[in-house]
Each structure stands twice: as C-alpha cells, then as structure tokens.
Image (cartoon, rainbow over all chains, first blue to last red):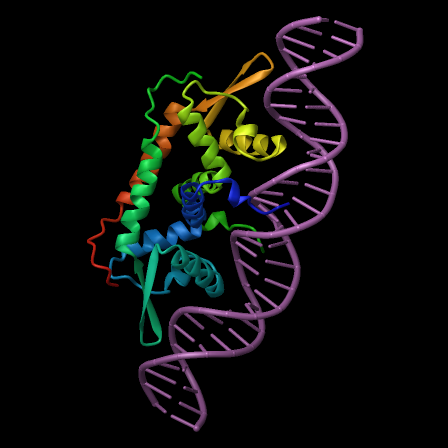
Length: 110
Length: 110
DNA sequence: TCTTTGTATCGTAATATTGCAATAAATAAA
DNA sequence: TTTATTTATTGCAATATTACGATACAAAGA
C-alpha cells in the first residue's frame, strides 16, 4: 500500500492528475508566474526572488521541466528558463475541458 | 525540513496550489467525473465503480469536501454527493485566470 | 430491541514529497 | 591552467500521501 493505483484509471485521468501535481506547490506556481512576468525567460535568480535554497529551486524546476511546462536553454554558465508555449496551450485546454465538462446551474442542491 | 514553506508565498499562490493538490490524484478526478456524469449526485457506489477500498474512497471524498469541490447531503443511511456549483465556478475561473495570464505566441523560443 | 446497511475514522505500513547542505559538473574569465 | 560562477545531483531528515483492514457510528427496518 501507499502507492497510487494508476492502473485503475484512464490515461486521461492519470495525465490530468500528473499535471495538477506539477502545479500543486506554491513554489512551482511562483516560478511559473515569475517566468510569465519576466517574459525574457530569466534564469535562476529565482533563488533570490523566492526564498528557497538553490538546490530546492533546481528540484522544482526539474519537476516543471519533466511535465514539459517549462524549457531551458543554456546561455553561458546560466540557463534561460521559459514557459513552453505549445505545451502551455495543451495543458490549458486539458484543464478547460475538465472544468467545462460540468456546467453549473448555480443552485447548490444535491 | 520536509514541510512546505507556505509563508514564502502569496495567499493566491497557496490557494491555487491547494486546489491543484485536490485534483492531483486520478481517483479524485474519477470521482469528480463520475459525479458529473450521474448528474443525480449518486453516492458511494463509487466504491464499486472505482476499484479502491471503501475507506480509501471515503478519504478521497473528504479531501474533495475540504476544498469545497463537492458537497454531501444525508439521505437515510446513504449520502448523496455532488459537485458544489458555486465553488466549481470559483475554481474554474481561478484556473482560467492562471492559464490566461500567459498568452503563448507559439514560437517555442526562450 | 437487534440486525442490517452505508459511511467515517483509526491505526498502520508503504511510498512520495519537501527542503537543504554538501558536492559535482560545466562554462567563462583571469 | 586556475579560479569564479552557475546549475545539477546526491544523500539525508522531516513530513505528507496513499491505501486498507478493523472498527465505530448512525439511521432504517425487522
């Protein structure tokens, strides 16, 4: 026990869960928002921007990279991180579909 | 160490992360989708629908209830669960805002 | 009342996540 | 080459999550 029973669920359900998990940490949200704000895809001055240790930020960046939300290009000793545009649109519509599959009628009755 | 440093982040970042975390499990997504499909807000025959133990389903339901995504009304010995319409719309726009804060231009360059 | 049914909670084991210091690796500059 | 700078990785401790059997609890029906 203790391990998610992925085989019980559909591909789609597992995928959506994985993406949600990538977003499910305030540090990763902060990283994403900072990458969005500084459009120029600024690198790891995220360490000073956010108050976490360098190793921790690096770890969060790797998780975001693994789901494909961000990408990085080497630039000398630094690395330029930025949102991955296509992937972003993909995730966006995945969530949109999920949230639009229920059309609330706005009476809160069961 | 090992505990999320919530104090480093904004209210909004923490809230969005909490919601994402609630969605970040395929079982909870499956529960939500089943509640959407059977509009009549069917109760815990989720146990037979999904292949997890009763205790496990109950635990997932509690997590969804805690974030407010679903609500339950007692009906004899059973409990009728359903999506919470207002909350759903709230979460929907939270995610929409998040995803729309970046407008991808579709060239994948940093 | 006693029994049945449906759900929640407790306790626990397995696994995953978070965070950081230390260290490695890679490139730029001296 | 040596040194500084930047990022990734390793190892580990603390905490959180997932899953389930056992059990408790509450309401319906016999």
